[in-house]
Amino acid sequence: MTDENVSRISEVSIVLSGAAGQGIQAVEHILTRVAKGSGFHIFATKEYMSRVRGGNNSTSIRISERPVHSYTDRIDILVPLSDNALERLRSRLSKDTIILGEGRYVGKEPNSISVNFEEIAESFGNKIYENSVSIGVLSGIIGADEDVLVKNISDYFAKKSQEVVKANVNAAIRGYELGKTLGLRYNIKPSEAVKAQLLMNGAEAVARGAIAGGCNFISSYPMSPATSVFTELSRLSNKYGILIDQAEDEIAAANMAIAAWYAGARAMVSTSGGGFALMTEAISLSGMIETPIVVHLGQRPGPATGLPTRTEQGDLNLVLYAGHGDFPRIIYAPGNLQEAYQLAAKAFNVADKYQVPVFVLTDQYFLDSFYNIEEMQPVNVERYIVKTDETYRRYEVTEDGISPRGIPGYGTGVVRVDSDEHDEYGHITESAQVRKQMVEKRLRKEQLISQDFVPPTFYGNPDYEYLVVAWGSTQENIKEALERLGNDKIALLHFSQVYPVPQIAKEYFEKAKKVLFLEQNARGHFADLVKLTFGIDTSNRILKYDGSEFSVEEIVEALSQEVK
Image 1 (cartoon, one colour):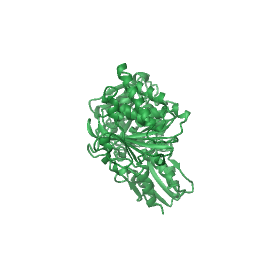
Image 2 (image 1 turned 30 degrees about the vertical axis):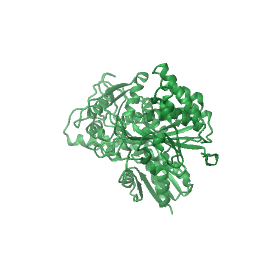
Image 3 (image 1 turned 90 degrees about the vertical axis):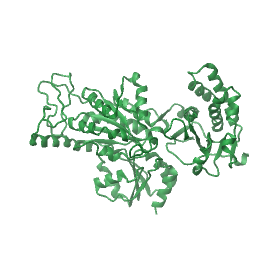
Image 4 (image 1 turned 135 degrees about the vertical axis):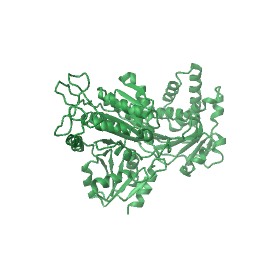
């Protein structure tokens, strides 16, 4: 490329695409840490097929001098690593996209640069080092710190022999030198503050929030994408004293978590829609015996196995109506990493306080996306267990519906629980009068719960005419789309507590000329819930359900058509 064609912007969007097993995740892991360690803001996410090897996966990495927290279709540099990578991503290419890679993959595409990653790698003894070469080339292009590159390559391969570490470092340095000579320049100004920040994905944020909330037991059965929270808690279990149990199935996992709460632990299960479907009887058990449970549910497309590695917001109704009978529950759906941390922690406190099931809804896109953030703030662990005596009544009828919760061995009282209807002491009953009394006692908690809400977050001009309503993982993508639109008539109301729907939201709806619901499911589950709650018109819906997340560009286009 000539200097006249050099791109001079403060951000670059890099996409690497190839087959599963080629090491794309390793490139993503190292390159993002090299960029962050060099002082650049990072956002990265991935899409991958449901297979161990083969197919075609991609990872998208935004490197910027300002905070970036959302997915964009734009590709500035594409690095194809397999035969069909280019064609799969052609719809995202523009006339300005640089295609960088082996000659056999880039072909004669416009703006293509042929780089012999494999040949360079073999000069250091093995073509397996080509990933390190590509990391080096991209690091050179963005102007990363060479010392940071060397450190991260060395750290990643530290468990290998010194010979392998040295070869990978040398391959990366050779790539780095080459990257600086390719004629590509990105004026991305580094920030010292970014270097000290955390690089975290959604799964890590949920897991660390659970720890902050006092989680000391997790029982789960693996199911993507929720397994990542389970494995992160497992990784940190020795450090934070967490008991880990990979149950034989989801039914056992949920029942073990309830039993752990009964014994005084603070327990969670992490699952996805298909796994949660098996837990619904246990959720009803939690409702009847008023023993808390915290459920993290990482959503993916259904029905049945659906698209196991893709994303969707399709399980709100599943958790809202899970379990037979009437009993209170709380549902959170964080929109960013800070909220994931805070709400995961809060879930344990409110589950303990109100003795109800509490759900934290995420999705594949949210769990697998990561960016740099400030250190998370500590959370106060609130405990509501009481010491019992001989007069203790586990289901004492109270004005607010919350009975004192004791645990076996803490005091002299007997802590009875029973899945049948029961009296105040926990004895089985078939009395119509007691049944009515107990149902009403449990439901009275809803009044307190509705007052202890997480308010929706408003973004935009208070004098809006159009109100975009969203929940969960679409938050950051919509915020950036509104920035690009630059239209003061449009604002965003984002819900991170989706049930009970906070009553304060009604005043936002009443003020809008037009309310637009943006969701990643086929029907508009939250729009239906809002209509049920407030009786307002929720017919204006922007929905996506193809298994991929809304890009910033898609949202801009959709809103442009709605705003007149």
